[in-house]
Length: 335
Image (cartoon, rainbow, N blue to C red; front, side):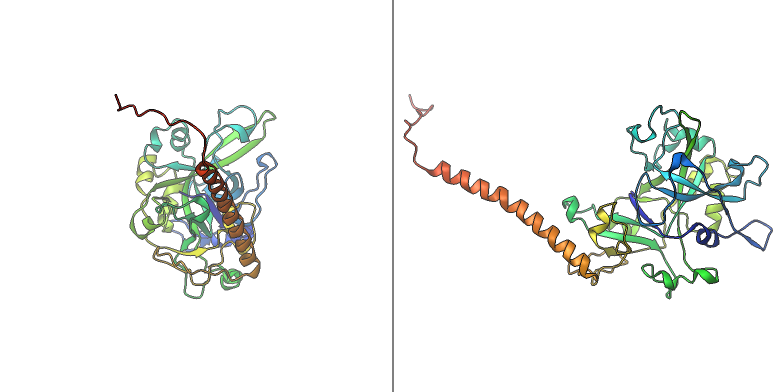
């Protein structure tokens, strides 16, 4: 599953981080950022990207220019959560959950099958994604939150952008996730580009966090094959999607639970809670005093909510134990 991501790069920084080499050419190219109106929705870099937000994705240039080389790429802002092209009315009210789509049965889906057949494959870009540990029976508010990212050079710290060296070409390894996109038209003829993240059953150590994970493309070759729908047919492209072996993750604060929290504290590791193998340490203390205060207040509210029903039950129990002047009911087993 993938329900929240982190992407704080500006379009020019993304262009630099997404350089690629075409076959038989040694010189690298940068994808061009192509802005779209998208019914007035704009891309805003964020530490806490949620469904219905706009983020740039990679697509083959031929989707926007029939004469383009299919191996050329564009960066196009699209909304997370695919809007069916046949939907009528407000695009926010189609009533379907389309931020993720399952790999199993994807080709036969009435919703996702047509975009797949049309070659509308994209690569969703992010610095990392957030995942909540759901393999343990806990309340949603008590589930541990983790920040998941690609393996980085030892000098690169995901929570410290100053270590990414973007001004010199960048050493940051972005997460590149396979997805599908579609185009929806409103009543005025304006287009909205939207995408969905492909997921499958988790394998390996990440299974201790969640039973499903996004389809991450680890190599440049996988990205090229996924995007170039003219050269690589759909069935072969789907076979490219395999569990990623280069994932790392660490524990973060549950302030990320609320999609309105966009601060840079969202992807900061909790002190004592850092982990790359899926283990969870229980003694975790937020680095930020503001975050500590927020968590303390939340904990008190939860405790008050739990104590109130308990007190009410005690009163009811006491009332039941008071003597009541009633005749006993006859025993049904007595003659």
